[in-house]
Image (cartoon, rainbow over all chains, first blue to last red; front, side, top):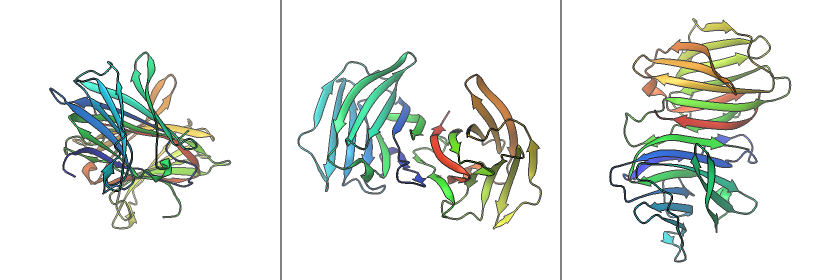
Length: 148
Length: 148
């Protein structure tokens, strides 16, 4: 996967109940960025099944949320216009609600964190095996996994 | 490895220069904890070569630092007495200095972070492939990787 900028296989934990509940990612973008995405994939080495695809179209200030099943993107992706993204970096928090199969995304700032979007996943969140970051990303500066 | 409480294979990054420079780990301990350790291992599935072994003997308030080569612990481990550890949790920061093959450890508190110890490694830090946490750990609450 030559275009993956960052790939983290979710760490092995002792108990199933100790699953990842919060992921914080801070990164810098390349010059003239078009887009970047964060994929919560169901297999570290294959992208045929993606529980949650979060993509930002930087110029269009648009968020695309979607999932992929057996190699096919869902046709009913969610699109949100939100004029909050800058062209130099991003700082996002993803919270995972296993009981409700929901991922909520926040934008972090010095002054706090702001709700961006919420997605109800088709797959159970326990299917997620790894997180990949794609697109016009210069460098990931922070990748923090929280277990609350 | 049934006694490993947490295992994180270091994420794949795009450029070799984007290596892990800071690892922050916060965890809670089991009741009546004796010890816990953080191993920076040179192979995710084998512990024959460990670039950096950091262990806290909680009751003795003693830090053991060491490395392992070809299955043998070094006989010249470093031992530091520092009466700062409590029996309920820990919050540590490891900074990796590749140029000097050195790992520096800090204890984090609300009020800042305090130097604990510094270790000059035998292996090059680029050998590290994964981080394992062992011992009397109830749960890892935060595992944050920084790339400065």
